[in-house]
Image (cartoon, rainbow, N blue to C red):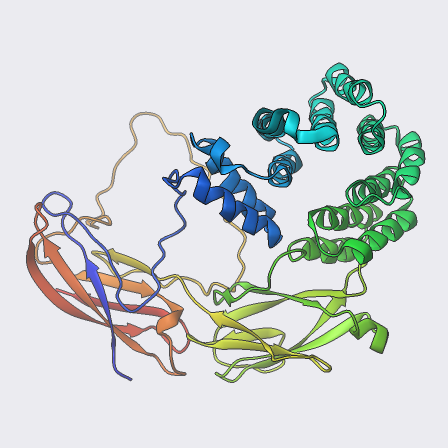
Amino acid sequence: MAPRNVKLSHSQITKWIASLAVLGAATTMGAPKAAPSTRPAVELIPAAQEAMKNGDYAKAAVLFDDARSKPDLRNARPSVELIFAAGDHHFAQNSREDQAEALEIYSLAGDLYGGELGPFNTAMMRGKRAEVFTRQGRTEQAKGEITSIRKTFPNDRRALLVADLADANYQLMQGQADAARDNLLQLVDSDDPIITPLAMFGLGRAYVQLQDSENAITTFRKMWNRYGENDSVKRAIFLVGQIYFDRGDFLEARKLYEACAVVGAAMQTKVRPGDELVIKVSDPDYFARTRSSQLPIVVSVPSGDREVIKLEKSKISDQLFTGRMQTALELSKRDDGVLQVGGGDVISMSYEGQTGKAREVRIVDDGRIDIDSVPLEVPRPRHEKQMPKLAKKQVKTDGEPVIVPTGRQTSGALTPGSPVYVQLVDADLDNSNKPDEASAEVVVRDSTGATLHTVIAKLTETGPRTGVFAGSVD
């Protein structure tokens, strides 16, 4: 095949400025922390609302946090539901800083809306603040928030339900699971669209504290069947996972923890070769039709490999099946439990009885370039797991350590006349079952950025399906 062109720049650190770029390949050099947004709150809040609507509460919280620092936040009019969701996201993180953030966010509902908030949302705000205070160990302030609800809205049924829920949550956090269970059982029957699911989650937590795993699972299953995939269901699955973990049933615990990663989230659309492919199927009819707790999925790629993985049914829902499959940038070996892929492959997944077209996931890699004055060591295949090595113990010696010159130039420094070794790691350029080729421009620039010299380097893949291309120029 024709070589792919990759542009690369390197220079002596004492004379030239180094620059790197890759053409025709994905070249994300890690994920730097995002700079503060310059977008106004009137743009950020609608985006946060849309993310919340799609079930991406983490993204909604990030966007809302960004909007909070903007002077036009009041004009953006974030919904009370968004404010509470952002506060809940921080509250769930459980760090001291996040608890302070949650408290500030919950209070923001009152600051922005004042009397417009209404009895129910005001009660919800105070109930959520009470939870934060309880977690912070400020129990008197927590009780004060709950008491304030009852005194302010003595005749509002829904506000009083919120106070009862806050009382039960306080009891749970104080380890009074029996009393919390009795109160929550009454709230579950309230048939309120907001209070009931919260009470069901709290009731499941109470059963977990009481080590009544069967009732905990039953409660969470009812919650799933009635309200579908949401953030509370994800937390419920995690709690059930803890039940199995405490029993010593680590395999079942792992399955539940894995399910947490996919509940409320869209299926992957791309995966890096060497990473695990997380597979999720939500089918309301499969278990009812087959009575099987396993769902066989056929996974295949155009480069030749075909594997079958059996997804496991969730303990919480008869509709959710999840599993994982390791991918590897290697030549095809069918039915070995690992999906061998090539650059540019599109993974296809299907199962018997599936409606609609097969699910597809693209193979996409992040390019990486290394250069040095000596040949570079070929990296290990990414799918091979290796425990980190312990550093060798240094032997103490008397006097100053002896420095032995090696004659080796360090990375970023070149001796005039020495070769420049180039290594490009990018599975996207691996397009056949044989070693492929790519090309690179080595550009020397002076301190002003002006080009002094350009040389084309030919890079050859170190072997079939390695995704590592190496070469040098003098």
